[in-house]
Length: 347
Image 1 (cartoon, rainbow, N blue to C red):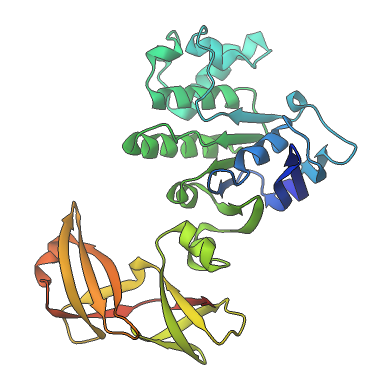
Image 2 (image 1 turned 60 degrees about the vertical axis):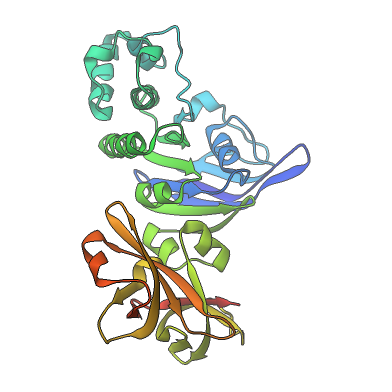
């Protein structure tokens, strides 16, 4: 069975926060909700957890109503675990006591603690420590272990990796994904980090100003955003004016294959291209471009390109592997090709 939200809305202090949210989260799957600050992400989790009640709409789990107009199941009866951004561990309790907090069967406590520690990759030698003796990544694993210990049907993660540095964030996220899959628990993560959402979820939902504008697989929402604003939000997007010609579009970058058309038949149209679709070379095939600058960026090299266009040239930034940097020098003419087709939007 699934977690289902149907036309859920919520206002706080008379200000609309969420409007008409409908979403289905399959059992045992991971869904990431991505949105900027103030988009309503945390409010959405609070409604699912039972900390707040929707003004309208319905939330159900496994066919049982959690919240509706006149129904409200208490948070402690929903079988939903919640992991806050800072972990919210009890500072006066040891790791063992934190994990055991929601367990009531004393005879099974030790086995369950060991099991969830194994799931989240937490060394049992840490069980006697206090939270302030742990690193940020270890604290988040303890918080997840505590949420998993009562065997919830659903886990809610409220930006749990945002306080960690880049390397630790990726490492902790991988460990959390492995633990969640091992527990076969339905999960919703909210985040403002687009890359995190796209790598975490089986499903990604995009929340903009309190409305769920798109939901689908990571590949679908990244490759086929519903509008230009969503395209830019989900990652670097290059927009060029085009003239539509059937299944193709003509532009300063040459003739482009149209993969999706979201322009609504408008006369003025622009094409969205992801940087990874651009292939630049020193060979003869492709649209001629002038190399403006070449600068190293660790394992990659950034090449700034200038394409002749009206009323002004179009500038593009392309990343290439560092070992190819010797192929390009400022002022030379290179060529560029757009691969995999483009998505059209109104200009």
